[in-house]
Length: 255
Image (tube, one colour):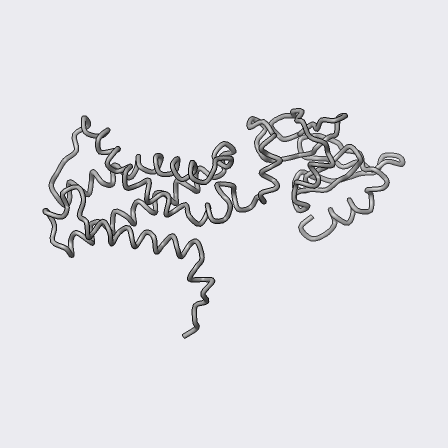
């Protein structure tokens, strides 16, 4: 049998699963909300392990739904875990209401949903913190496909523009950000943006222009000029000093 490395045992995801199991053990032992008196130990542990597993799954699903949102991606780790906990409490509340009726025969009238939400939230916030641990350990709520440096750039871009870049255009000491949703000036120089954005996202095409690789629809010659055509109709000139690098970058596999 192959051995498991210490690094694997110490990975954030494994630690998260261990935390969920430990929480299930604790709740099964403590028997909160009347379960200690109502259930024998085997049933009590099974009851709480099932609820923790359901809460963990809902927290992970909620995290995946929220992560693409720009506002969520900029939240500090603790705040992101709290948001995940409060949002995932909504579906978890109905899971708990169903479990209470099946196991204890207790129905939950509409007038008690608020108190049930608060009770469920007291546990779900802990579960959400455990479930979000792999993301927090990797550097917060930012999406894994985006490096932290990219987050520094997008923090200055208006949310209405989204995160799908077309091109960046230098305008004096400012930068015009072009996306499929529109354009806006931000306080940044092109040289700074080029240093911040990962090279895989795009490349410098001109002393005044940077283009996103995924936005390039093609390029053409027009007299002695080379022009890059971007999706959405934008045309960007290629500077002579950048021509060789642009061709190499766009013709390379994955370019």
